[in-house]
Structures are given as structure tokens and as C-alpha cells.
Length: 430
Ligand code: GLA
Image 1 (tube, rainbow, N blue to C red):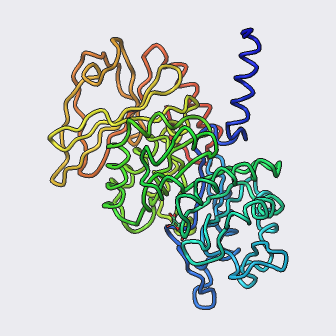
Image 2 (image 1 turned 180 degrees about the vertical axis):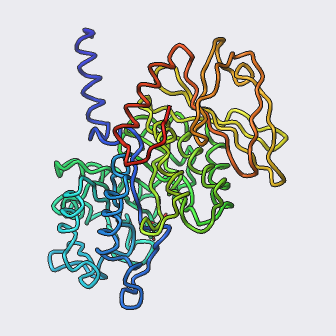
Image 3 (image 1 turned 135 degrees about the vertical axis):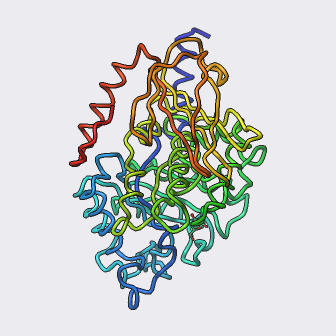
């Protein structure tokens, strides 16, 4: 075959296979209702916290007014329990009329008017996990069209009350149906989480072709134990998961619970650091109206966000698991930079961990690390020089590590990023 013909064929076949919506070239960021607000539909007694249009408007307002949008947190995502128990006369899903009196299209308009995007939730089965109407195979096209007509920007398609065969048919079908609407709709698939998250049952190359992100594993709960369980599973299976991720296709270890009730400040920094290293979608599930300034500080850390959003889109890995309880994570970034996370699972006292960049497989040379949570540049560091980091129990030390020669350029990049996203916070970044 003529090489040009072969190339054209190859490009064509990729275009046909890929979820070619051009969306989510970096992990999506925003807010998602589930972990914090669950299926609270009691608007009579708990009007501020129930699943209603007001809750999503409130969160949209906060995202705009408290500086989140400029940092990239642009999705406002509805989860389960938004719909009416019945479809309408035309067989379409409809929102609960009491809790969403304006309808979803109006809510989407509200969100769009503020420069944000709206996400919605569906379930490929007879019912959603919360018992609301599901999207059976015969309803896929209708529901995709309905979401597009409403102006929805993202769909999380859950997998309760369905079986392996339905999922195998349904997840690709919804991908096609969303594409066919002509509206750019990011597609989050819970499929692997319902199939154990690992090959041979789960086919990650197929997932990358049909979904923008996917839940691989169980639900996060508001506890440190839950975060640890997730981190362990993702790290233990990183040889399979890490190559599956890339621009437009992300593993999703589930929501950020920073600002809720279960994590200390050190643990909150750990979740932020590890989610950044894992190139995870950053969906906060918290109450932005009452968030503490310390939680906000962590979630709005510009360098942690820049690491998460690095354009290279390579997921990081756990490099080491020391007997001391220290684990080291690493992620390669664009322009020869990288990120390191020193994570302590100890429960006694701050631990002084000694190592060198050479021991962490760095190529010979001089680097200039930046401490992400201390927000301060460190001195020049040769690969061969031993250094010590003091890591708090269940905490992290996170470094951004550009080669020294790249430092000036990186600093300029950092400053640009800083001035774009600054919301009256006067600390100097780099
Ligand atoms: C499943 C999902 C959660 C959430 C609930 C809603 O458990 O994994 O993220 O969407 O359903 O019922």
C-alpha cells in the first residue's frame, strides 16, 4: 500500500474509533454534588442542602466569586436524585418539578452565563443507584438528545442495575449518541468500576476511545481510610492504569473531599498532592459556601493545580514504598520538569526522610525544586546531593522540580499563571 494511503486510512480509522470530541485535554476540574450532599431531597426541612436548582446556583456563584473559575474549576455537576420518578409523556427524563422548577435548561443557562459548565448524571440500567429512572438501552439516544437540548456539558453515566452485557453495549452506544448530538459533552463512564477495574474484564484502550474519564474503583467516603484505600489500589495497579491515561482520557479516583469532615489539614494536602500526581480529575465535593480558608488554600494552590493540569498529560507513579512508611511518588511534566511527592503513612511524628534525586532515578544535573505547600523555592540541588525532607504523619512534602537551566522560564510561566489567577491574594508565587 502507498504510504500516503496507509496514513490516511490510519488517521481515518483512528478518527472513527476515538472519542473525538477534543474535550478534557487536561483533567476536568469543578464541583460535584455527590459525596457531600448525597441524595438529600428534603427541601422542606433542609432547603439549603437539598438537591435542588438553588444548591447548584449557589455553588456556581461561589465558583465565580471566590476565584475558583479562574483556577480552572469550571464544572458544576449534578449527581443522582435530580430527576422526577417518572419520564415525561414523550419518554424523556425530566427534573423533579418541585426541586428544579426552572428546569435544567434554565440552570444550564445560569451556569453558562457565569462562564461555567454544567454536568449531569445518568445510569445505564433500569434505575440509578438512588432508585431514579435509569437509561435502558432503548433510551440512550433520547437521553443523549435531551441532555444536549438542555445545554449540558458533561455526563456521568453510572452503572447500577445493569449487567456486563448491557454495559458492553451501552457505554459505547452512549458515546456515539453524545457525539451524534453535535454538542460537545464530556463523557464520564463508571463502567470499569462495575467490572473490577482491571483487565481482562476491563479494556482500557477501548475506554480511552469512547470516554473522557472513567471511575475505576469504589466510591470515596469522607474519611482518611477511604482516601488511603483508593491511593493503595491505584498505586498497586499503576502498571495497568498509568498507561491508560492521557490527554482526553483520564482515570478517575473519585472526588476531592478536602473541606469536609474527614481529613486533617495534612491529610487534605496529601489528597491534593496525590490527585495532582495521578492526573486525576479534580472535582471537589464540599460546601463552597462554608469552606474554611485553610481548605480553600490547599484546593487553590496554583502550583499543585498546574502540576495536575500539565499539558503533557502523563499520569504519575509511586516510585518507592519504604519500610519506614514513606512512599515517594513522581510525575513527569512538560519542559523537562517533574513533580515529587514524599508521603508519610506514619502515625507517630514528623519523619526525616533522606534521599537524593539520583536515588529517585533523576538524570545527572542540577535542579531547582520548589516546595508546593510551603510556597517557596529551594536552593540549587545536584542529583547526587543528599537532602532531607521532614514529612508530617499522614502528610506530604510536594516538590515541583525543574532543571536549574529551565528555572527562569518556569518562573515566568509560574508568574503568568499567578497573575492570571490572582484574586487579591498578595503572596508571591515564585
Ligand atoms: C454510585 C456512584 C457515586 C454516586 C452514586 C449516586 O455509587 O459511584 O459516585 O454517583 O452512585 O447514587
